[in-house]
Image 1 (spheres, rainbow, N blue to C red):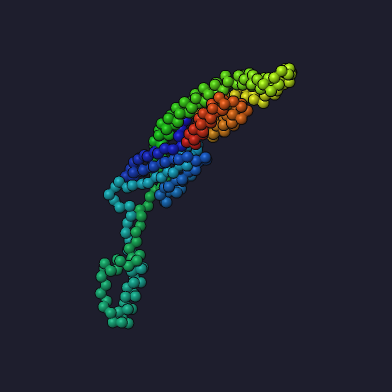
Image 2: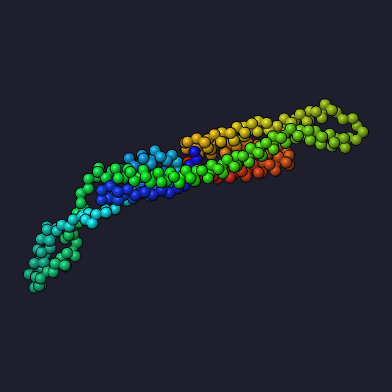
Length: 293
């Protein structure tokens, strides 16, 4: 089963009064690169959450985030008066009043505006009780991501099959054309010799030797066999339920090498034209494989 590396997933999950929201997006990458953003107070879960992502995704750049929203109307913090600081402020005020004859009156709102007079105390949260919420919302987001990855993968697989079919068709054309090359070369060579020598007898042994050398030089049987094997392997890999992107990428490199060798060894305009078409299809496969996990 082909899976695309490019996808997006989102999920929400409620645990008590807390709503967990997770978003995940993945893009192409040669390796697996996980970027995880969770609230600072819950970094203790980072390793476990990364492990969950790694178990589902083998390759690609993954950006995942988990946020928390309090559904209760209660404030998640309390306010406290910083009494030691206030006492210090009053000592300074009294000193100023005595030394410079200032008014002792101090308004409450003015005092509250002074730094750190009022302290914000976040409510204590039992971290362990929230871990299931992080785990579950991440799993649901990964499932949503996977649905899109599979859907995109199906489209990529259909494109692969179409292009492999075309390559096999072109390879069949090359294979049928290959035996004719030697016959045509022998005919052209004989005609050229007869035209140049005219009434002089032709050395058939030398002619046969030249033809044999050409046949050996232009023999593409080995390349055809290897290319057909690569195409067969490609079909097998895309049917596997595994991350096959790297294997497909390697196969395409080998396929490209065989196609280039066929083009350089077979000095024939018809095969050259077919080889150009084959190179175009291999390049399109290479581009698509960059999207495969």
